[in-house]
Image 1 (spheres, rainbow, N blue to C red):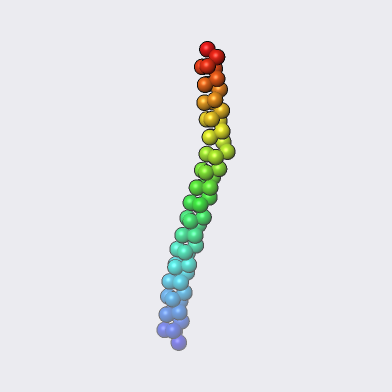
Image 2: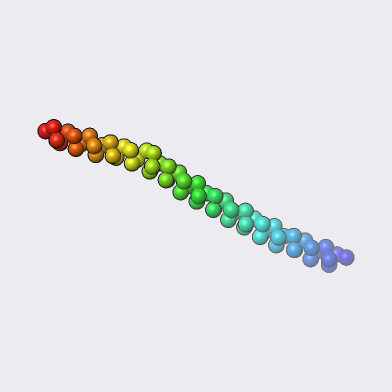
Length: 65
């Protein structure tokens, strides 16, 4: 009986280790997707508009001069 309990305890520990690794992998995937989405949003709505506005204004001031 004790032997069966020890084997089931070892199996439970292995299962918990595998489950922890899968959870960590899921967190990594979600974190990477969130980082990529944040990068794309910053580029699309913050950096590119400022860069194009700066380019436009510098061209206008160069044309006036």
